[in-house]
Length: 289
Image (cartoon, rainbow, N blue to C red; front, side, top):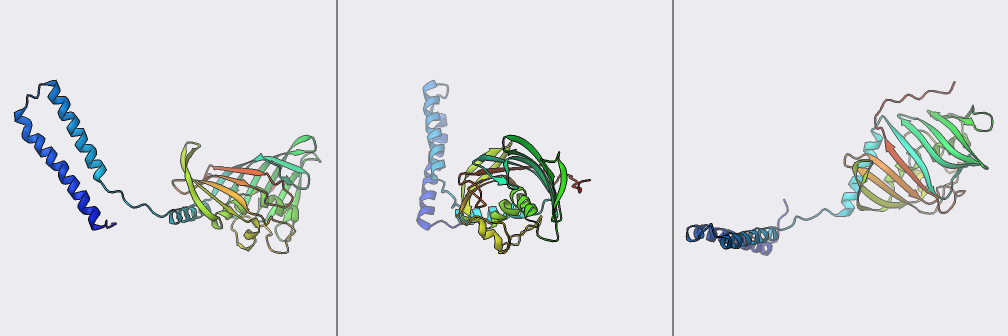
């Protein structure tokens, strides 16, 4: 228990003695007044409320935890909680700017699932030239398949999980929230608690910070494998990007918003938003047939 300085304790005790004395005075006057008188009732009511207010003001406030300690503990809890899940659903939307994948697809919206230990599936809504297209993606233990929007949605294997596959790694990097966005929780620079907010009916704590995408190359990330070493053809941006995280009371990450390009090929004003739900729900991911 925190120990208050002696002068503050004595001051608090003295003021509370004053409150007790006032209460005793009114008890003693009980038999000296006509309690049926409206004026007497009103007067004593005011005095009693004043005494209660004085007692409230006399209570010392408990010291608050340092925010740095609180935010680091919160981010640690969030990372561990998300890593312990067997599965979760995610929704990714491009809020502003543009992000291009697979050379020509301008990413708009993604719905998908992550299943531990190393699988994910996603449905991409994107723009190809002037047409809107849908692309399905499946990844299991590093092997990645995707439908080709040009050839009537035929499945193509982009990576076998054993050798480098640039297209498969790019899809994993951008689509699977484990690859960068959840991993970034462990390297946020100067994170701060930025208030609370209700997201999807859940009370959350909002944390803001920034990170440098190239710093993730030195992190051994869990989940779906992706080539992130110095020889990788994937060029992560070396400029800091802003990250806002909404964390529920039980440690689950409910939403992440990232502002700035992860790749050198993306627009400077790109903003992405991930929303997470359906935690630990049964999901089966199978190779395409």
